[in-house]
Image: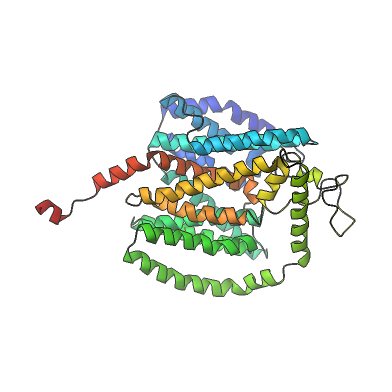
Length: 450
């Protein structure tokens, strides 16, 4: 039945495009289709040629409803505006270069089909980027519907968390595949949504952004993910400092004082569990992380320029390969059951070599520095909140990625490229938006008299 639904969805692409061309007002709400399937991601995705027991970052040629909706949006907007640029900014070219640097790893891959799974995922993720970016170009900067989709995911996920809490889950994960995945998602979204509330006065609507950012923060804390808990304070401090430095107001000082008090109360509630999580963490967990990191370094030393094969970690970490010979235990797991190194950077370096790792870092750095640059350009516009929140959020998840590899999971990867698409749009039109904001600013009475 799942395959029947999938082929029905594929067949429905052209009729859906036709319907959107006839009723263009539906295009805006179709954007929600990029986010709502995340609530039932496994149920709305199919893995062709899959190996569900493989311990890797991709287990099949995955086609999700998210990707189908992305294709529908891309085709619809292409018919309305003409074909858009395949690589709208330098960040896209860096991503393409990263993709190219992953290809040489195929020569060292034991299972090239597994490698194809990850390469396919990278292509599909880029479709999400293009869909969001093309929509923003078409709508002239309608970031709100994108945020609404994210807010719906956070809210419904929170209801799922409440249910898991009453069922006695120690570390909740909501609708996400793992608690660390949810923590990373909430870290980035919380920063952006709170920045919206903190930097814009929108009356009652501001409360929805504040409440949803609070739900995201509670969800993150309730995962008891040590990496996220360590990075989250830095995320919020970075967002607040950027907001005050470039756009100071007394209102923001009052908000900081109020929410600092509320945060201390919340910390008092969760602090015993947080301390317990850090104190009672098994020593074997830390030792396993070290062992896997050493194994990754061994792979990089052995294959520095091409790596051992993208998405082939689950094979190369196990016998008969000797990258993990340094481990003290001799009864290592077989059948590709050993774990994945808990950092995306060592994982990419091991699988794709130093060139692939360098391109990944450049890709991340491009959007981080672009957000930093946009703070000054957009400080007098309503869009200022996005780079302020994104800068804090990206700082957190890039640091968390030093401790966990979950940024490579589809849901987090989609969120990341969605934020990149918004930054890309603002970067292209930043000065134009700034001039429009200055022109629309009310003229002071003293200036009129003068």
